[in-house]
Every structure is written in structure tokens, then in C-alpha cells.
Length: 65
Image (cartoon, rainbow, N blue to C red; front, side, top):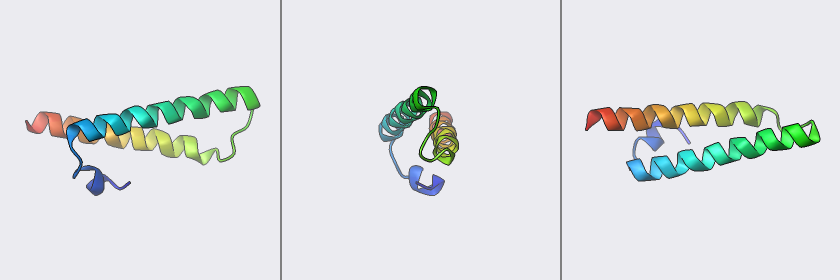
């Protein structure tokens, strides 16, 4: 999801999405630790960026209030 699409979401939707992305990242790290490999290693990087994007937009919305 692009940043401009995320800005249209409400704060509660963004926080729920952030929680989901953190869980996904945790699962990816767990699978990497257990199996030694991940199907798509770039997915970890993309998930981390998505989390950062979400946090940035959440902070923008909070400071705008």
C-alpha cells in the first residue's frame, strides 16, 4: 500500500495495520531462525519499510490534531 493511500485511512485502521505488519515481521524472523532460510528474503526488508511508513503516518496524524 502506498503512503498516499495510507493517509486516507483512519488512525485506528492504521494502528490495526501496524499491529498486523509487526506480527508478520515476527513470523518472518521466526521462520528465518528455525528454517535458516526464508522463501523471499526481500519480504523482511519490505515489511520493515511498511512498518516505518505506518509509524510515520500515524505520527503525522497525531501531531496534526
